[in-house]
Image (tube, rainbow, N blue to C red; front, side):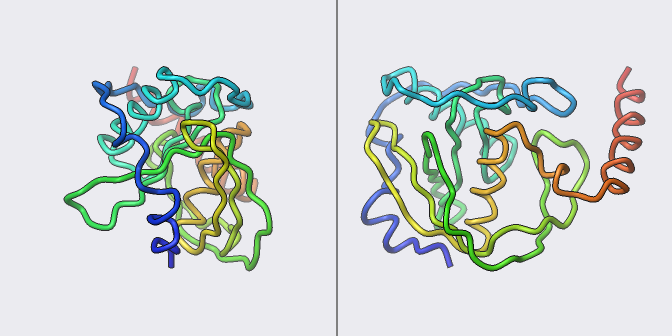
Length: 191
C-alpha cells in the first residue's frame, strides 16, 4: 500500500532521528487565517534551523493529533511538509519532504478528508490514487518515490497547503458555503 519496504530502506529512515533537537509545539492556524491562502517559498538553505522546523512540525502534528502538516499551517511560508509513516502506534516516525513536487498521478478515488486547519469539518475529496513524488530531504539530497492510496492522499493534501489550497477548495460551491455558515457559528460561539 505505502511501498514502505522501498521507502524505509532508501529514504525514510527518519532523518530527524539523526539529529538531537528539543522539539517545540507550534500553534496550528485555522481557516480563515490569511497565511493559509499564500504560496510557500522554495527552500534553498538546508541548515539546523530547517531540521529544527521539521522536528517542531513533527511534534506538533502528533500532538494535534494528525498524520500530516505543512509549514503554512504553523505560519511559516516555506515548502516543507511532514507526513506520518509510522508502522505502529508506539513508535512515531515521519518523513519531511522539502520542495515536494507531485507528478504522474493515476486513478481517481474519493475519500474522506479532514484538516487540522479546517475546524469541525470532513468531506469526501477526489484525489489521485497513485502519485510520483520528487522532493529533497533535510540535507538537500533529492528523493523520489511512488505513493498510493492513503499515503498518496495525505501527501496531496499537504502539498496543496504549500500552494495556498485547502481541501475545502475541492468541494462544490454548495458544500463550501455550508461550511462557511458553520464556521461563522463556530467563530461567533467563541467570542
